[in-house]
Image 1 (cartoon, one colour):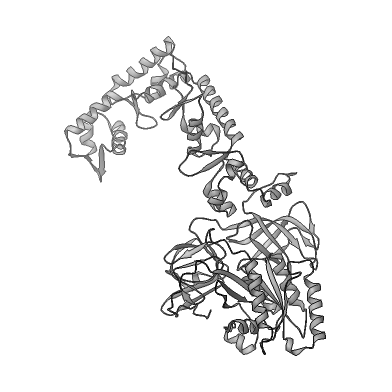
Image 2 (cartoon, rainbow, N blue to C red):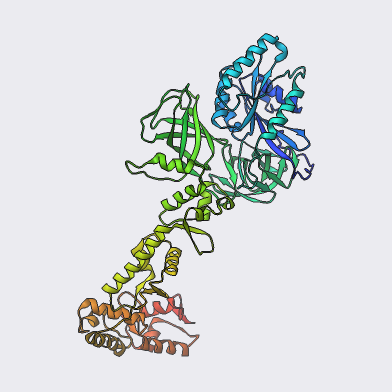
Length: 640
């Protein structure tokens, strides 16, 4: 694909529903003929930069494509071999499905051959083959020696037993055999998940005249369509896909496994960078902490707890710090669970592979796989290895159950998708298989069965205790009940608990036990009547609440409870913290104002109409404004 990303090419791609799309990457030492090999296979020069052509070396990623068979298309990612540009190599190799490990027959295995091979092994690239280039420059004896050295390098790895093809990009010798082996190996490579959620790590950003901002990358999962809205992570900005191309040809839709160029609307190139990821809006969360399984290469130095490293995942390179669990040092060749703290947020999901490189000097020292992206604090003695073993294991139901049970109030389907990266359809029956309870809500929400039953029991005990402490109240208010159970409990979860509990009754905002009824003693009934009478007789010039309660004839706590009963029954109306009125004069006031609708009036007018002082007039008018009986306009009010 040229620098324009093909956006000057107006050809529409025909439907390719039966086409298999595989990304092949090169790997190997500098000047071992990777770019020449790609050109010999495809006819495309992957070196696109002027500096690359001037210096005769690959500096950044290059791309090409090959229709290998009628139903198999290969996209090639050509990577630089120089040690100074390994970080560019890492930005391209993360999305490949198979690797061509390129070794020059006249030089055999070199330092970057080893480093590139270890990177591919750590990333668990599933398939590959070995290409001995420049075979026309050596005799059979040297060619056999190169085969032996390469076999020794890859022994015990995913490339052990892989095809070894000797070629010459100059004469064309061996290229037909290489194409046949590529077709055979590619046929065994599983395609990327086009049914998953759309994710595209960006590896290039540029401008095309007449089109604007264009980004390219390997679509590692899902599909993307023209005019689709996407989100760029970690920035969180929403962008529209103005146009799409695959291998230089326009298309309406791109799927996982394709090298894809996207023309994005409403953003300048400076607003995007290599390492950003395009994905579905609001689906995931960029993170700064990951828990992982980390492997240290046998050739690396011991890795200390809290050591700084360069972290590479997808197309991103981020500085990070290593936190080892239960050990001060990770020894060469060992594997351990660890936490990585990233200096910058990134879109990462469980199952994503990564590479770490030493901070200085910058060399590859290891890699691993993301297991969990949630931030969690572990108590001393907690079995971290068991927890991460469950999350990394094959039992999907056990993984879902662990995450739900760890959450304070369970998890919704959207949370599980964001936390695991699995599609909702893939999660499917896992919650039921794990013995979780699905709450009857519009969007699925799951809680632990034992927790839910315990919460129902706790709810009943809380309501019973409330009745014991407040026998004169009909029941406990929902907000108070929710706070008693758990301060941060979502309201919908309380609703689910109430719906599931047969031992409580919810009436509006009040929750009570089925058999509970307010029964007043004789002195309480007299006090209740006295409180109501005091406010009713006062009209709109009401006495202070403490004064009325002090004369009720019962102790202060019971008197205040009786006041609350009258307020709940709407016999009394509270208009401010200190002012309570009887409903009768308030209704008369509303009638008085209704008769004057739609008059405009001032505070002095209101005082004249009601015969009350400013002490009562201002709070009453503010209450009437709040309840939309009146509306303030400057120094006057309008009766609504």
